Image 1 (cartoon, helix red, strand yellow):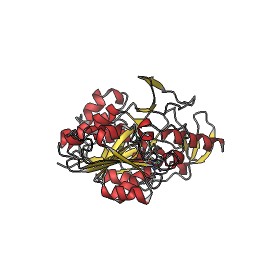
Image 2: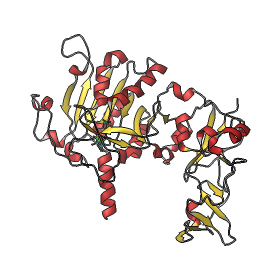
Image 3: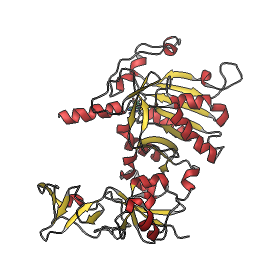
Length: 397
Ligand SMILES: C[S@@+](CC[C@H](N)C(=O)[O-])C[C@H]1O[C@@H](n2cnc3c(N)ncnc32)[C@H](O)[C@@H]1O
């Protein structure tokens, strides 16, 4: 119970992480560089936002004319419906509006729209945003927001981390273009991986191997376990490791092939493969283990297992994705062995009590690295699992 409370609290907190302007700008510029018309005459929906101070709303409103947008819609989620309970103070912008409503400000979501010059200064920009209370709380799953989704061409946001799967499915169901932030681990979710495999989704242009900093509410209390907290320019920010953009908008970086060495040169010169005479083969897949993306050999024709971070360098003209070690995601690369008659052992020699069935469908390697738990059978045969792997193959030229 205590644990689930803690993880609920952590999820609720992560749901209130706000994206920084510079990160949005850098990412969006990459799409414009590749296709300057990418947003022309498009309706952009920014759901799960807080339009009064969200950098997404600010960025697109400021660039409305420059990008040639047709319509910008941005919606927020009602304060009372949020999982993370913080103190609420409506903005002066809202309270001075004639339609300000003391109750609705807490229980209703809001919608901001921008289509035309309303201020009469002959420019369409942030000053022309019109707002209303939504009928409901702004939940992206509500009929009201679904209608806006259906009206939009492109959906852009940093959705609540705890609802990422559902949010992506919500976009895919309506067959929309999108650019959203999520955790890199989502790559192997069974709802996400098939999209990546089929080149219906990919990683964005500016990903963050070291994590990304998000602004957090001013009354946000950091848990002791959060190590990366910081104040920047008087604002509280927090680092979230392993975060990346997911999109189906094209950008140039994904069409740059990775420069690679041959297998022989990798074994001779790649410092990360020191001590290796050959690439390991998995015990249960017909594929070789490539533990680092920069160690992918240029001249190997067979199937290779690579870390999920490979996707940040994935060029669809160079490689084909065949599967992942996630259950249900490797039909084209079937596992050749099960480990139900093995048991798991700690490095101390103590059994964990788990059966080897636990490592079925992982990418398993023969031997013991002296670090991780291993699995052993009654003949003394020892295997260990590599981290999650994606199976790839060079594309035939
Ligand atoms: C990670 S924050 C990001 C906010 C903003 N998009 C940004 O990047 O600055 C996610 C937002 O979604 C809101 N939210 C949580 N659950 C939601 C739901 N079911 N429907 C819509 N919004 C939700 C949260 O309250 C929070 O404001």
